[in-house]
Amino acid sequence: MPAQKLTPARIAQIVVMLLILIAAFTWRTLDQDQGNIVKCMVKTCHFSLNNQAFEIHFTEHNNYIVGDSEQFRVSINNTIINPDINTKSWLFNKHDKYDHILITNKQNGDYVKVIHKEK
Image (cartoon, rainbow, N blue to C red; front, top):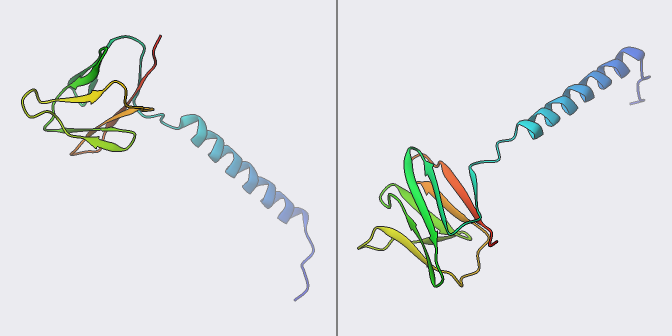
């Protein structure tokens, strides 16, 4: 089957489609939700997720997160951390290497990503 001649109408159609695709991808990139990212620069961070207050305390030896351990799950570098049964808070070693802490609502999947930077 021989190739068809490229007509001005076909060129216009290709250009319009390219412009639509470029506009859609640009809009999607600019409108992209970065999620809920909290950057902690201090010893104690306060934030909320789904109207539930959380505190993260960074101490010399251990770090711990205070929040609702029934509704939320905490993971560090994609490893789930179980809450302490007595205090109902999450405890993790300060010397564990981690990039971020992810707190996720077990029911609806909403999340907060916490990034801690030492001063």
